[in-house]
Amino acid sequence: MSLFFQVILDGLWAGLLYGLIAAGLSLIWGVMDVLNFAHGDFLMVGMYVSFFLGFLFKADPLVSWVASGIFLFLFGMLTYKLVISRILGKAMAPLLATFGLSMMVKNLVLNRFSPNFRILESTILEGRSFMVGDVIVPLPQFVTSLFALAVLGLLYWMLTRTRFGWAVQATALDGEAARLMGVNTEKIFLLVFGIGGACVGIAGGLLPSYLATHPDVGTLFSLIAFMIVAMGGFGSVPGALVAAVMVGLIESLAGFYIGPVYKYIAVFGIYLVVILIRPKGLFGW
Amino acid sequence: MSGEILLEVKDIRCGYDGVPVIHGVSLEVRSGEIVAIIGANGAGKSTTMRTIAGLMHPLSGVIRFDGADITRTPAYSIVARGLAYVPEARRLFSKLSVRQNLEMGAFTVKDRGEIAARLDRAFQLFPVLKERAGQIAETMSGGEQQMCAIARGLMSNPKLIMLDELSLGLQPSIVEKVLETVVEIRNQGITVLLVEQLVQEALEISDRGYVIQTGAIVHQGTASELLASPEVRKAYMGM
Image (cartoon, rainbow over all chains, first blue to last red; front, side):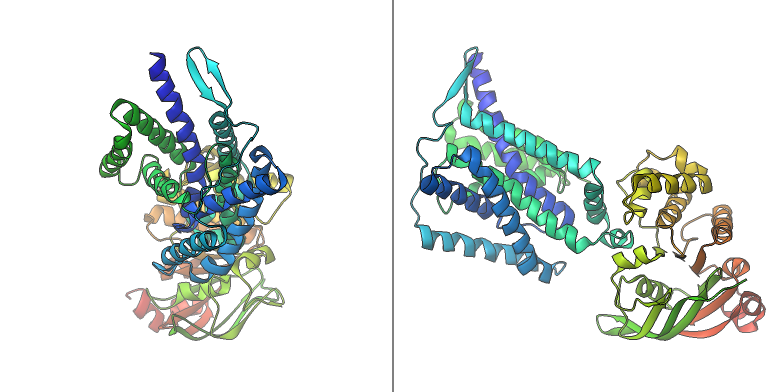
């Protein structure tokens, strides 16, 4: 029985991390109908920021996440200003542009920093864990999960309880009507892209505690994040969290009880079933 | 009863993607008036209003409001100047509550006390909205949604409110009620510019009117002149 709980908890940690990564993607899609194909590369950039702060200045990821978050906040806003704002609303253009951005960022990092896997040594959380009964809780994953809950909680609070959040929702629902209320929707778009970047940046900042950094690290995470956003319902932050935890649990259960090679077959299979039954996602509008 | 010119539109031309829709429309609204723009579907009534509200900008021509040139001013600053636009088909924030919709109407105001006071006034004008404050906007009936849209426009405390096709999709008894409210709004000192397809009903509550046809003004005059005009009666009232 404790083995079962071990598998469940492992799935939960993975799921919460996925939730943190998917939240920004979901927010950006929900507000401006842009699928940011460079989202996984935002994560990768965040990891490099954290890795180099640790490698060069001995900063621990538990501190560096602040820098990664801020860096990706600015990177997100820059992406909006330089790329997205010029082509917003023009059919496939934003999709293709972010795809191009993804290629560019990935290859730039590959070119500058080589394809080598980089591992940050002797971080505070590295290798630590604690026991709950017979179940092992690895500290890096546990702390990342707490961050995920805190960031998602804050994001949800901001969207539903603050006037800025209402303006974001109003912009998402009807941009023109929002402008008639006095909302500068351009500014909302800019900030939303920044906030989406910051969320994934915080995830990227924490990950070097237990994951190697390399130019392609974002690819699988990005794929999973897209699936979570579609499954949870485009634009719904709570939906993204629920779908993310589901994905984490399925991945962990299938990986243990069926076999590790089958875990993504199970994950993407269940995704297909959900989308067939509810095309707008679990919490979609 | 009419005061100085509040809104002045001078020979504006506008279009979508280079295709002209409005070919030189001029009109003026004096403070305290109810002015109606009437005309058939597709004549350019809504385009005129959208241009005044700043959602689109004219290719040429000038729009002046309250003494300032607002021809190129973006929509979000126009509302702060005291010109509110209640768009066609209401355009409420469908997933937000009535209260949130109304508060969004006062988005340019930061003072919580002022917002609360305006909310009270909106509830006085439309008591039904007070009962529905917590309800999600899209779950209300068409008439209630229209009241919510008007109230949301009033939350910005405008000098002039533009009401676009209030009667759209509403049953006649509700239309009458909504139009009565328009008179009440004017009696509170707010100038009204109105777009309607229900020509007779609109002119009956208006001081003056403009008849727009394929993007140009073809008649103008006091409401009673237009109501008596054989051309207007023939073209728009089927008489």
